[in-house]
Length: 532
Image 1 (cartoon, rainbow, N blue to C red):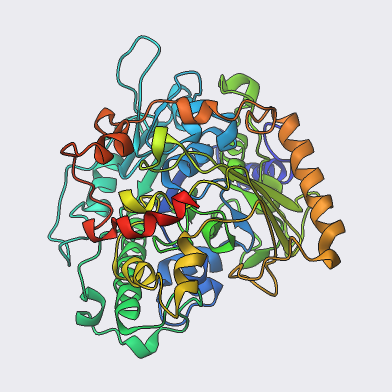
Image 2: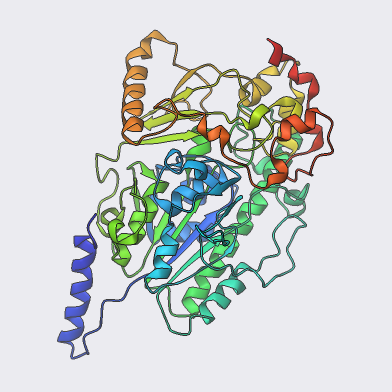
């Protein structure tokens, strides 16, 4: 990895030379500030820059218009903690040991790029949701914050009971004011929105209309309750965008906007059935826009290269002039996007960026023996190939313990209620057991509803994708592929109160409260398929 991209370096030299010619004193090359903004559970289709009409995201659209919009940005693992871990380390989740699981003990051996920036003269902090859920310790057992310092003390009166009372902009301002040495800064704005829960009918009360929704995905029933749920999500996503706008305004007021790289994305798709926690197109395909007035001269470009969340860490390190070797981080799997950002091309810029590997292991609790649902897959061209390794398990979690890898809400309830009815297909698509292989043409079938894996016409395509995926995962020493995958089920869960949840629940023990599901999600009657 080069220290500074040639194009970026030449651009800075031009600035320095022009300053000398005008009689100004030559300035030392100024390192950029970085603002990394992560929505919590936002789907790519719901940003205005990607074509959304009924959800308004002017701040995100501003970043895209004044920077670069990536049309094929993917997380390798569509769940909060492992997705964020890939952002922070530049490694795929299967390369992070326990850090590849949700609700884990993050291994001390893996350094994050914010820790590197902190060691190299940056003022580093965050507000809201950082790397979660899980816990991290240093080698000596002391508590570790992967994002250095939390600025979340300033609160406001939130517009609903379920929107966070964190005054994100005020906390960002406190962070800026604490930078007395005028260091370059890195700040992570981790919005809690639009994560569940939602205040019921808050979207309707805000003036939104059920008829304004431009799409109810076909794997859900199109009912009034489902549409209300979508509106509640839309309200929280728009709230996130409003907060993003406030942070950008704060940069303007502090005269910091020009030299700040603003990266806006989400950690996984919306918290609805068959999206968050799964590995489909709407699960892993996420918004990504990057703006940098000083460094991105060719604006309003749309990039068609496949981009991985593992690419963010090496991009930031390159722009600040730190090599992977000097960082002390474990070898980075991702590729820097610096040349794309500082270049002038749209569309496909680097033809080698033609695919993304994805996968998952254990997400939430609720299966016997703390088991996960292992998947590996590859997006390439118009196709998504998936390999399900344990088809005897429930992909969304066990019925009797509430399908815990799907957040509770009206849409989940509607889908669960379809079990055993004439609309049973809704339950099957989101919660039923799956076949070993799946193949989808995501251009023609972006909802991934028509499995082509067992169609003879696609046999060659399936074999090509499987071979490439397996070959690359062996090179990355993926335990699942090299025969040691069960190690992921044996990593401890944090917090400890959720250890052995399934066994304890089935034994009739009094269990800790689960804030992300409703107790009506626990469906003993849907457990009959376990015996088949």
